[in-house]
Structures are given as structure tokens and as C-alpha cells.
Length: 108
Image (cartoon, rainbow, N blue to C red; front, top):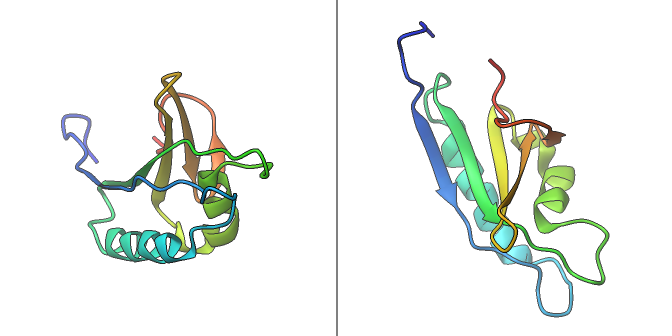
């Protein structure tokens, strides 16, 4: 991509959380997989992502986004997961299913 070209952002927002009892919302995970599938067909020069709220549960040692990345990382080639903690304003980014430090999950 040339320096004067702005990247195209293509994303999907999913407002998914753990169930009240801390179980995996399996049907919602299937719809997340569907969104990732659609994003995988977007132009490869675009910055593709799924944004989701930070969801933690007392019974779990990981957030729902961390669980998704661990379980479905094989689907996330070229797609970022952005986990937004609305209460604190914190943003956690995952690239190819791995946590990324810094302001952007996309490689330069």
C-alpha cells in the first residue's frame, strides 16, 4: 500500500457476553464464525476486524474474546479481534488470535 493511500476498514460489531452462569454462548459463537468467514472474503488490503465488548465472568479465567481467539484462532488469518471495555475505555487487540500490545493490531 502506498504511503498516500488510506486503508479500507471492514468490520463487524458483536455485542456478545458470557451467559449469566458463565457458559459459552455457543450459538453466538457460530454467528461470530459466520462474520469472520464473511470478513475473510473482504479485500486483503483492507483492515478487517470484529469488535466486541470486554466480557469477563467470575467463573472464567479469560474474557470471551480471549476464549474466542484461543478456540478459533485458525479462522482469524488477517482478521483482528478488538475487545472494548466500555466502563474503563480499555482496548485489547488480537491478531491471528494472539494478544497485541500497542495502538493497532495490524502490522505495518
